Image 1 (cartoon, helix red, strand yellow):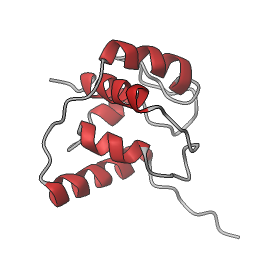
Image 2 (tube, one colour):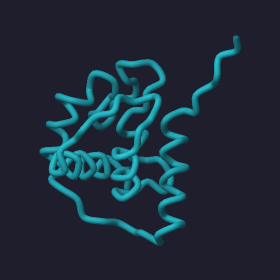
Image 3 (cartoon, one colour):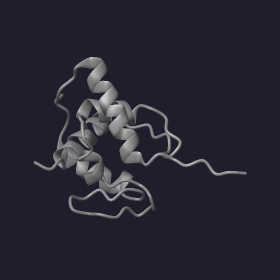
Image 4 (cartoon, one colour):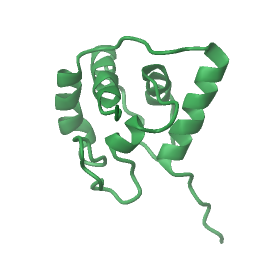
Length: 114
Protein backbone atom coordinates (compact mmCIF):
# COMPACT_ATOMS: atom_id res chain seq x y z
CA UNK A 1 0.00 0.00 0.00
CA UNK A 2 1.33 3.41 -0.91
CA UNK A 3 1.63 6.06 1.76
CA UNK A 4 0.00 9.36 0.93
CA UNK A 5 2.21 12.39 1.18
CA UNK A 6 0.97 15.04 3.52
CA UNK A 7 1.25 18.65 2.50
CA UNK A 8 3.55 20.50 4.88
CA UNK A 9 1.53 22.49 7.37
CA UNK A 10 3.07 25.81 6.37
CA UNK A 11 2.06 25.28 2.74
CA UNK A 12 -1.45 24.33 3.74
CA UNK A 13 -1.72 27.38 5.99
CA UNK A 14 -0.43 29.58 3.16
CA UNK A 15 -3.01 28.19 0.75
CA UNK A 16 -5.82 28.69 3.25
CA UNK A 17 -4.64 32.22 4.03
CA UNK A 18 -4.53 33.13 0.35
CA UNK A 19 -8.03 31.77 -0.23
CA UNK A 20 -9.40 33.72 2.73
CA UNK A 21 -7.77 36.95 1.63
CA UNK A 22 -9.01 36.51 -1.92
CA UNK A 23 -12.54 35.57 -0.87
CA UNK A 24 -13.08 38.22 1.75
CA UNK A 25 -10.68 41.00 0.90
CA UNK A 26 -9.72 40.84 4.57
CA UNK A 27 -6.73 42.73 5.78
CA UNK A 28 -5.65 42.63 9.39
CA UNK A 29 -8.00 42.15 12.29
CA UNK A 30 -7.28 43.00 15.91
CA UNK A 31 -7.05 39.99 18.15
CA UNK A 32 -6.08 39.42 21.79
CA UNK A 33 -3.05 39.81 24.04
CA UNK A 34 0.17 38.41 22.58
CA UNK A 35 1.74 37.93 26.05
CA UNK A 36 -1.15 35.74 27.14
CA UNK A 37 -1.00 33.93 23.80
CA UNK A 38 2.69 33.16 24.33
CA UNK A 39 1.91 31.68 27.75
CA UNK A 40 -0.92 29.60 26.25
CA UNK A 41 1.36 28.38 23.44
CA UNK A 42 4.06 27.39 25.93
CA UNK A 43 1.62 25.21 27.88
CA UNK A 44 -0.63 23.82 25.15
CA UNK A 45 1.17 24.00 21.79
CA UNK A 46 4.83 23.47 22.72
CA UNK A 47 4.56 19.69 22.86
CA UNK A 48 4.36 19.68 19.05
CA UNK A 49 5.44 23.16 17.85
CA UNK A 50 8.47 25.31 18.47
CA UNK A 51 6.57 28.30 19.83
CA UNK A 52 9.25 30.82 20.82
CA UNK A 53 10.70 33.44 18.50
CA UNK A 54 13.87 32.17 16.86
CA UNK A 55 13.26 28.48 17.50
CA UNK A 56 13.93 26.61 14.28
CA UNK A 57 12.99 23.01 15.08
CA UNK A 58 9.72 21.77 16.53
CA UNK A 59 9.62 18.90 19.04
CA UNK A 60 7.60 16.81 16.55
CA UNK A 61 9.24 16.13 13.23
CA UNK A 62 7.66 17.93 10.24
CA UNK A 63 5.53 20.22 12.43
CA UNK A 64 5.85 23.88 11.53
CA UNK A 65 7.36 26.32 14.00
CA UNK A 66 5.29 29.31 15.03
CA UNK A 67 7.91 31.52 13.32
CA UNK A 68 7.32 29.62 10.08
CA UNK A 69 3.56 29.88 10.41
CA UNK A 70 3.71 33.60 11.20
CA UNK A 71 5.96 34.31 8.22
CA UNK A 72 3.99 32.31 5.68
CA UNK A 73 3.12 34.68 2.81
CA UNK A 74 -0.39 36.06 3.22
CA UNK A 75 -0.70 34.93 6.83
CA UNK A 76 -3.15 37.06 8.80
CA UNK A 77 -5.03 36.78 12.05
CA UNK A 78 -8.17 36.00 10.07
CA UNK A 79 -6.44 33.11 8.30
CA UNK A 80 -5.20 31.74 11.62
CA UNK A 81 -8.69 32.01 13.11
CA UNK A 82 -10.08 29.95 10.23
CA UNK A 83 -7.25 27.42 10.52
CA UNK A 84 -7.78 26.93 14.25
CA UNK A 85 -11.52 26.35 13.73
CA UNK A 86 -11.06 23.78 10.97
CA UNK A 87 -10.42 20.07 11.52
CA UNK A 88 -7.05 18.85 10.17
CA UNK A 89 -5.60 15.38 9.84
CA UNK A 90 -2.18 16.55 11.05
CA UNK A 91 -3.43 18.34 14.14
CA UNK A 92 -5.59 17.22 17.06
CA UNK A 93 -9.08 18.67 17.20
CA UNK A 94 -8.52 21.14 19.98
CA UNK A 95 -11.31 23.13 21.50
CA UNK A 96 -9.78 26.49 22.28
CA UNK A 97 -11.73 29.06 24.24
CA UNK A 98 -12.36 32.17 22.16
CA UNK A 99 -10.19 34.43 24.38
CA UNK A 100 -7.32 31.89 24.30
CA UNK A 101 -7.66 31.57 20.53
CA UNK A 102 -7.51 35.34 20.06
CA UNK A 103 -4.49 35.61 22.38
CA UNK A 104 -2.75 32.77 20.54
CA UNK A 105 -3.41 34.45 17.19
CA UNK A 106 -2.08 37.76 18.50
CA UNK A 107 1.09 35.98 19.64
CA UNK A 108 1.65 34.16 16.33
CA UNK A 109 1.05 37.34 14.33
CA UNK A 110 3.54 39.14 16.61
CA UNK A 111 6.25 36.76 15.37
CA UNK A 112 5.91 38.01 11.80
CA UNK A 113 9.27 39.36 10.60
CA UNK A 114 9.17 43.05 9.91
